[in-house]
Each structure stands twice: as structure tokens, then as C-alpha cells.
Amino acid sequence: MERFKSRIKDIVRLLALSSVILSFSFECTSAQPVSVHLKKVADKLRGPIGMAVPNDGKGRLYVIEQGGKIRILAGDSVWKTSFLDLTKKIDAGNAAYSEKGLLGLVFHPDYKSNGRFFVYYSAPFKAPGFDHKGVLSEFRCKAGSSFADPLSERVILEVPEPESNHNGGQLAFGLDGYLYLGLGDGGGAGDQHGIGGNAQNLATWLGKILRIDIDGQAPYQVPADNPFVKDKNAKPEIWAYGLRNPWKFSFDESTGDLWCGDVGQNTYEEIDKIEKGKNYGWRIQEAMHCFNPASDCKTAGLTPPLAEYNRTIGYCVIGGYLYRGKAIPTLKGKYIFGDWKGALFYLDEEHANYSMQYVLCSEKGTNETGFHINAMGRDSQGEIYVIGQKIIGTVFATGVVYKVIP
Image (cartoon, rainbow, N blue to C red; front, side, top):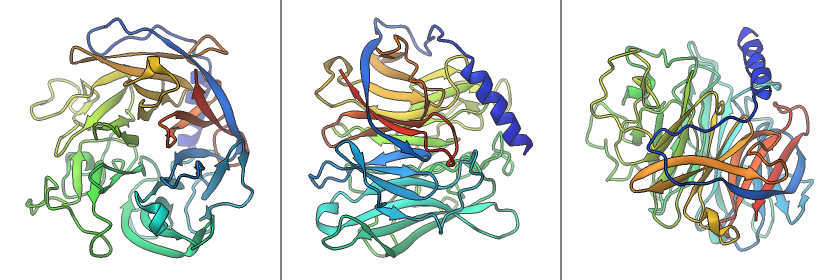
């Protein structure tokens, strides 16, 4: 209860924040704000925290509701029947505020022919020292149907979680055809798990991004070129480590680069480009600043973020997408992301340095959307969506989905 009260105080404080001048982590460039409109495509959702789109040519959007449902958006309407309802299987935690629930969804690259898709959710788990478990499962769409078969579940991976928060849950397929899963550090504050924390411990999946082959021998196979396959003291599924809570990440469909927003602890949020076997520093560093120890930390072998921003700018980074759409030429090749406070930004590269700048919502003249941003989305044409809610939690139907348009 004290943790919840503290978070409510933080929210009240954040809502009182006005627009501020953005500072850069790297050398400032000539980047300028870009103005867009936000076109509402759905509302009255309950706790929407993600979106996925299959490559099936139907143009439907599939939105994750944290409470356990996957909703279908077709045109300007939300179907009444859920694509999949897992509300009886998940541990959704506190309905007013929780980091548990249905957290991830991705469709198989060959979904059109095989009907396979994958989810990551929190499930009850009664064991000493653990709060719940994360479950990676495969489901299939019913043959000839627009809805999933709830009885088709095949559990692929289970992750015991010591705390209720920092669960990650993002799923994405790389251009290599492998499935990537992001996991937080196990929760609590400061990654107080063991001597150096979970994120620096290669013997646990927590605080990592995993990479597995779900098309091989069941339940999955570890790709032979994963960086720690030959390390007997490491989990072979690990692709990268040293992450606090990689809440959202995505692949650039043109280059295959993996972009990630990693939520900070007290002061800094960061954007990373995730690469094979790299250590992104948590809990040694929070973004580019010593965290544990608080000064004179050893940074050798750590990969710094592309950019960071502090808590005067936002509260929790929401990873987004490298824009490859056609509707907004001024955003071409820029990384579009958000913050839970309700702000939109883009990251621009110039001369190997990165700078952050506002994406202005022209209705307001600022980069404030007027709601909490929980996730970003991308459709099959490469256009960007903003997913969020006006009142947090899964009780009130204040969830919205907006399309970013010129």
C-alpha cells in the first residue's frame, strides 16, 4: 500500500509538470521539432499497453489490454468479441496500478499460413521468495476463424519473478526469424538481488533480452550463434544484458537494428541500440551515470545508451519505432518514442551523435498528448500509433489508440 501511495504522489507531481526545454545527452545538432496530428482510432479500452499487427494483409490492429484481453481494431471500430481472453489465467495484480498482466504479443512471420502467435503474461506462482511467474506461450488462431483458439496454448518458457514489478514482456521477431523477449531485473528498487544484481548475473534470465528459435525442436531451441552458448555459467538464451526494465523494443525493418527504451530507477531514462552480447550497465550505471556504487564505478566493458533524459523531461521511457512510413517525410529514419508522462519525442542521428527533440501534437502546440502513453505501435505500412489511457489501471475504460498523421 505504501508503494502504491508513493506512486500516486509521483503521478500527481508529474501531472503538474509543464513543458520544459529538452537537454541533450550528446552534442546538440540542428534537429527541430516536428508537428503532427493525432487521429483517434479507438477508445473505451481498459489498460491498453501494447499493439501487434500480423502480416496477413487484413489491416487489423490487435491491442493488448493489461487485464488479459486482446482486442481487434478494424477500421474505426473495436470488435466486441476479444481475439483472445486470458483473464482467468493471469495474475493482473492491483487493478488500480500494477506492472503485471498480459504484457506481450507478437504474430509469427508466417501467421497468414500457420496461425501461430505468442504472448507473454504474468501467472500466479506460489513458491517461497517469488511473487508470480512470467509465461511465454504459443497460441493458434482457429482455422477459418478470426479468433484464437483458447485451448491451443503451448507453454514455451516460464520465468519465476521475485517481485511484482519490472517484468518487461515485450516480444518481437528479428529479421533473422528468431523470437526476442525482454525481461526486467526482477523488481523492487535498485536491483537488490544477490551481490551484483540480476541484470549483471548471466546465470539468470532477469534483466536481459533473450533470443530463441521457436521453429525448431519443442519447446524451443537456442540459436547456435547466441553469444553465451559456450559459457557454462550463463543462460544460453541471453542475447544482451545489464537492463533494468526493457519495457518496449522494436526492430528497424530496413536494417535489423534493435532499438530499446530501458526504464530508469531514480533520475535517468535511456534509449539503447541492443547488440549481440553487450552489457548495458544496470545496476552499475543508470544510463550514463554511476548508480551502484554511486561514484567512481567501473565502466570498462559497458555499452552506453544512445541518449538519455532526466526526470524533469519525463518519468518512464516508452520505446518506439524507427519510422519507415510514407505519410510524414520529416520523420523518415527517425526513432519515434514516448514517455509515460504523455510526451512524444524523436531521436535523430547526425555525424554519429544522437539528439532528442519534441514531436509536437499540433492540437496542443506542445509534445503533451493529454494521456499516459503506455506503448507505441506500428502498422503494416510503417505508420506509427500511440497507445495509452487517461486514468491508470484496468478498471476505467479510458484507454485510447491514436494514429500519428501529418
